[in-house]
Amino acid sequence: MADHSKRVVLVTGSSRGLGKAMALEFGKRGYTVAVHYSSLRPAAEEVAEAIRNSGGKASVFGANVADANACQELVKQVTTELGSLDILVNNAGITRDTLALRMKEEDWTSVLETNLSGAFYLSKTALRGMMRNTWGRIINISSVVGIMGNVGQANYISAKAGLIGLTKALAAEYAPKGITVNAVAPGFIDSDMTISLPEEVKKGYLARIPAGRFGKPEEVAAVVTFLASEEATYVNGQTITVDGGMVMY
Image (cartoon, rainbow, N blue to C red; front, side, top):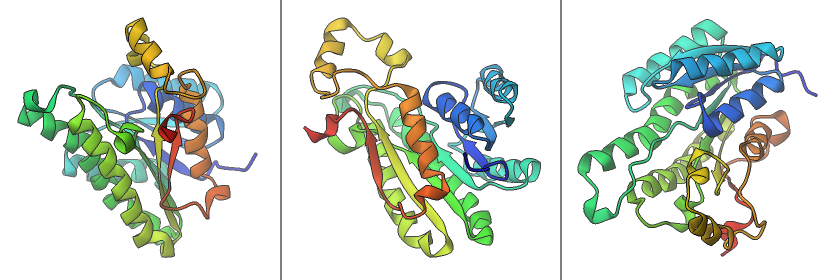
């Protein structure tokens, strides 16, 4: 396995779910991990402790990624404490699902600010250090619904589709500086959300997935860590779906 001990990765929203799986996988592969939380510090501390217990390095950082100043401060804190910020995984996100006619303006704004604007604020700040080092990776966690749409998620889908556009723009702008920018679009992944779905709803979703099952968080994490690696140097501006073939339909 390559020596990643000098690479520092920030995974936003890594106190639980997909972000947790990514942080743990990066830790397992030898990266120094900045575990980020918005409100769940005890859970983030548990993730960092699990990384340390497995022989890795991890520190915990809190910030509201919907706030531009907080994003700037987060990147500054990570860089100061850990020495650099080489890899940024924009994973933090929220949902406020309802039909468009019922959607409150604050539900539209909060989802766009957290899921899309936060990724822009963090990327803009992190890019400065990456340019100085002539090396960097930005990986935006989108979703298959940002490609194919879904009912009751106009705000979430707009943000996730926006992340794909942001990925392409940044990829074109900063590739000459040794920085790659890619997106990962997970499909339906085993999580608290899918576990709570009614059986009939699960059957409906599964019927649309050629693999015949929901994905595992670790399967998404594996793709993200690949995109962060030296082996992915020539992969840029792409959106990779991890969905069991769902978006073929």
